[in-house]
Image (cartoon, rainbow, N blue to C red; front, side, top):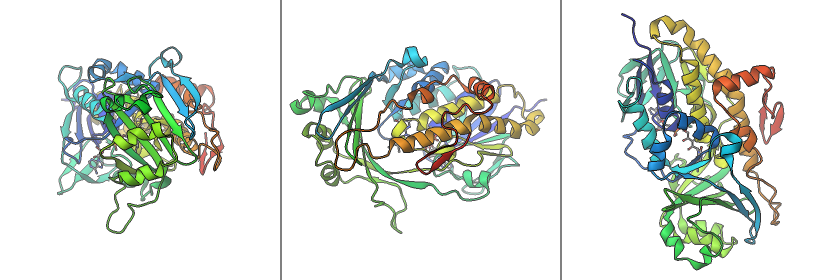
Length: 431
Ligand SMILES: Cc1cc2nc3c(=O)[nH]c(=O)nc-3n(C[C@H](O)[C@H](O)[C@H](O)COP(=O)(O)OP(=O)(O)OC[C@H]3O[C@@H](n4cnc5c(N)ncnc54)[C@H](O)[C@@H]3O)c2cc1C
């Protein structure tokens, strides 16, 4: 009897669960291996850009996300350090890109992805999730992973969706690849919208119920904030220069509890109304923001990296999760004809190559755009804002899935990329 196509996905984050959904088909045996118990807060809100919200809609997730209070973002409004409105960028992305930019709580996105991957109500055998299981090594050619404790599991295809600190990456590349401190850290907070409605100073400038992303920009600090969960919560990301405060010998973590008093001091010169949400926050997480330079490959043998493991990027284009969703869709598309593992074993590396060839230039370009957008927003001491949050939207959002992108790349001799051979910051993008 033919053996089913067996797939192991290492990591049950946004990329891993999205890959589980995209690959779920027929009697394929898909197992997601996740180191945590999955019963955790994944903190704060997240946006899915039109390029990714279109894909999750095709997977039937829109009603699940709407039931959890996902919101359509109507636009960006950008203020300077004097509190003056500098720019309004309306987002009517449905007509231009075929989908909306949506904002939601990370936990809600995660729950919806998990439901879609594991529930028997969808086509294909439900995906199994094995929690509290940490992968410590991988044999990329053999298609095996070893768990902490020594158990070895095998599959026809291994997907390394284990995030920026990926354990699989070193086996794919045959060396450790350092993640790079970017010079930025981010405080992240969520407060009730109801508490803001009592703050006259704030509501005379911003209606916190309106689905708009507000940015307040100084030279090297900025606030990015807006509502989520049916306007019941207000999310704030406060970007600051990285003091590398976590990098002591005793503490190698990149996330820590933020010091609220210190944060307020950092934003001292910001307009009073803009500081109101910071004052109301009872706690803040502090993330040191790291990314990766483009990797020479994402695959080896029967193993492929996706998501942050392959192309971690700064959050300044809001594309990290969206690019993971695109990777997942590409896996689903290019493996769609593989019915049965044994027969196809020899093909798997070439399909992995096809996924990499299709995805890598695009993901590297968006990594570069994310670094570009993180550069100081004004001249030192000035207030004129020299960045536009919509600058790269056409490139980022005009995306119709992997088959279409592959066709477009071939039609332009592999030089689809607007950024070919252009240097952005220290990142050189080659088409
Ligand atoms: C401040 C900030 C704001 C952001 N805002 C946005 C935004 O608005 N929009 C957006 O698109 N992106 C945003 N991002 C980026 C986004 O969060 C990531 O790009 C996205 O979560 C990547 O998904 P992933 O599945 O690749 O990795 P992760 O979500 O990190 O998931 C990796 C999973 O693998 C598990 N894992 C790790 N190692 C192992 C192992 N050895 N064995 C088993 N399991 C393992 C982890 O526990 C985790 O569950 C933001 C990031 C930051 C830091």
